[in-house]
Image (cartoon, rainbow, N blue to C red; front, side, top):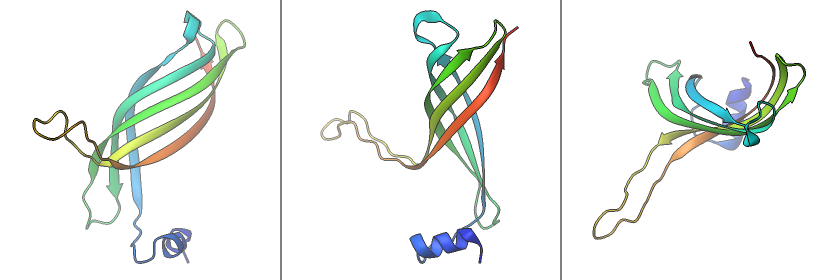
Length: 127
């Protein structure tokens, strides 16, 4: 039995599982407090996620994505740094709405989505 099928049976009985490929295109940056190019940093990214099911009965979808993270960049040499980071990526699936409607709405928003957590390590080369 496929592990995904077993997971669906145990945690979501009656729900069909499908194979899904997820593509993400994101743009953002890092902020180092104090104006340095090493030490602790925060990262922010906005982008789009493409959800592409392998089953032809389902359509492809594009959804907004937001990523926030923290990390530390170690100064090894003038041109070489070691970077460690941890980020969360949230993709909105069923968006919501409303704002400052007259006669009723406050600021409402409902979004069923999914959250991914990612840890990374890498070398940064500056030239």
